[in-house]
Image 1: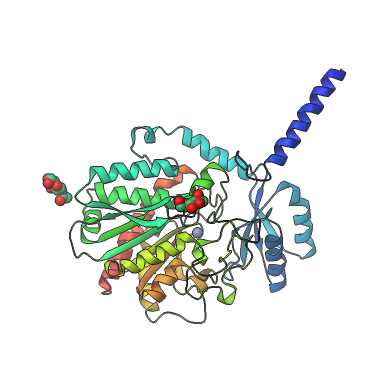
Image 2: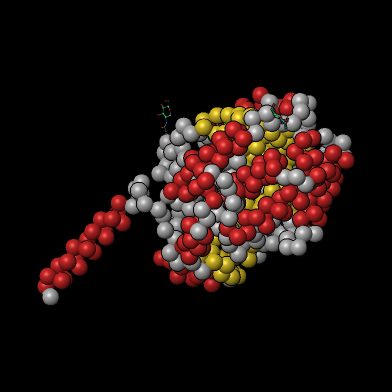
Length: 431
Ligand SMILES: *[C@@H]1O[C@H](CO)[C@@H](O)[C@H](O)[C@H]1NC(C)=O
Ligand SMILES: *[C@@H]1O[C@H](CO)[C@@H](O)[C@H](O)[C@H]1NC(C)=O
Ligand SMILES: [Zn+2]
């Protein structure tokens, strides 16, 4: 009996030691057992302040989707330890809430189970029925470059903080085609974005559908399937919910900045990003503080005469967002055109059997103020008149952990939307 007790005590001590070990740089994966995600309805500034302060003060709360004035919603993930306090706070402030996800870890586990059943990657081909890791995506990219040497070419955007190479692929069937630049997975946890980007690359190279062949052969495509390479790798190996870069901060324990708030365009105005290094939307200490954002700005400047359309892949929420991000009080001169193109994109997607609805409009108007984004930087600083952020599926049922069975439907929506977007952009004379 005593021996048993001793063993149990020793085991408990080991557990304590092990969990203390995970506080620093954990060799194991962060778990999200019984973490819940809530959809909050915030009806006034005070309610919003309460929640934003909560999220900024403790990194145990994680905002999945920021507040927007149209839906009045904010999506937030809460740890089981904080749940009681959280619910009390909601009661005190009369904040309406609805549980969206009951156990985040269960969704992550489900995602992995489906992944294990997919053997496609082992022979170097992709099936898009699972989410692939960075090394798999890079090996696949190598195989594509080798298989299509006369229409593809690798380009290098630069190096990440952890010295990974940020790679892209250019697909060109003839010199002088109008160029389209696609940047994907700047936010690490948005895995559907690189899944969609790799699928899209494959379609441009292999599809025999006339409309897709025309898309492939009439334009030069510059595609970066995984831009935030450090964050993406970290989201696979350590923490599924990682969003930011991986550069440490000089005076904070918190790591990384939001690369999509770090570009030098209306940087940090109108509360469009956070000055707090622990926030998910930390803008960095200065514009271009993140080596990745700096490298992309330099690379895009160097090839600015080679592209006319810029598209950034994100999830989630089902939006097609155009400039401006920094203010909802002003719109670009060609906003009517941007809306027309947005309508074409959304209609094409809604007409598919899934009936998925996308909302379109300026970032600040239909979603929220966001400053220093790549799309706004390209629009404002490189004067590219057609720029969009695509926020893929879904509306929050699964959020960032979109089940692998939805990868292909999401990709079909991307193709339908992209065909319509490029078609309308051409009709309006931009390309
Ligand atoms: C690529 O090059 C090969 C060999 O020169 C040629 O047969 C093929 O038609 C080329 N393909 C394209 C798309 O230009
Ligand atoms: C990246 O490489 C540079 C030059 O080799 C080195 O000084 C630096 O420590 C490396 N950074 C990381 C995070 O490994
Ligand atoms: Zn994003």
